[in-house]
Figure 1 (cartoon, rainbow, N blue to C red):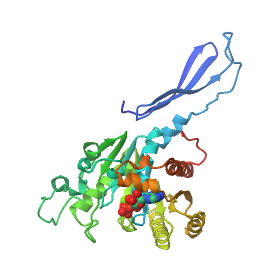
Figure 2 (figure 1 turned 90 degrees about the vertical axis):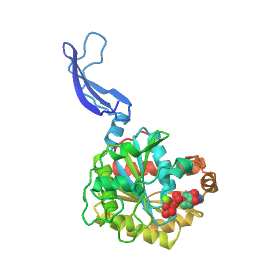
Figure 3 (figure 1 turned 180 degrees about the vertical axis):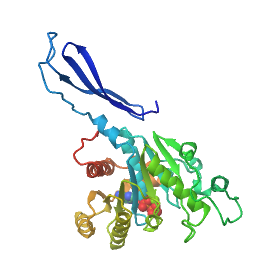
Length: 332
Ligand SMILES: Nc1ncnc2c1ncn2[C@@H]1O[C@H](COP(=O)(O)OP(=O)(O)OP(=O)(O)O)[C@@H](O)[C@H]1O
Ligand SMILES: [Mg+2]
């Protein structure tokens, strides 16, 4: 099933007995029908409940339905743990029933490794596909182009190039490394179109692993995302980067900006980070973990790190969902 259905239906069962029924079927294949109902009108002789006003108690799956399409980017200083967080969250959101699309938008693309994919199976970043970019932007693959399409059609690309790993779709975009080449070249137009399409048009829960620092925000390539999460390690430079990235995100109109403290070795470090982050709520604090390093060295999925680390990320994920949708019950 690759459709989304939702609706209310009213069924008349007999004289004076009506059942109102909320139903939905979710894109990722879970059917959640007949989710809630209430009796309208008087009860019957058939042992049905006595008269009640209509009751519509929405089940958690309905909330999941409303949360599909959420777009989250993960940023911060180099080496703080962005890719690790992205890989673990992708799996945790998938376990919650979300249809997850994880995007590696770092020029040094290595999200696939954090999924435990062996190097030889890691797809080449789309940014390196010169022929594809030339075809879409109306240029030639070798010659520098003075004119190219600024808004190439990329709507078919995600499903052609993603890799499915444990129920998560992984798309390796990469990014441009040449200084200043962000927008004024066919690759820049291609990447921007692809990110914009993914953020604005696709229905999956999208997680974007951004390049380190503020540059990725400067290109405005993540405009339209719902939330930016900055990962912070104990250290002034990391905190400064987080504050700068957060400011740029707010300037771009990104509504929700939050942080995760990572590689904490003493509780007081979390307090320092919390006090120095300017109006950025802390979703959670993760300890420095040898097992995170160990699974990295052994090229295993980041989700195989110790249970405490994964649980810390689960709580941080839930805190983010709370932040985005206060008052909604979540499926956990
Ligand atoms: N809580 C942690 N404890 C110990 N090591 C960690 C922790 N989180 C991440 N690491 C390790 O830190 C290193 C950098 O992590 P990661 O690649 O996730 O960071 P990054 O922010 O994505 O880096 P980059 O800026 O290069 O993309 C990796 O070796 C990873 O295993
Ligand atoms: Mg990374």
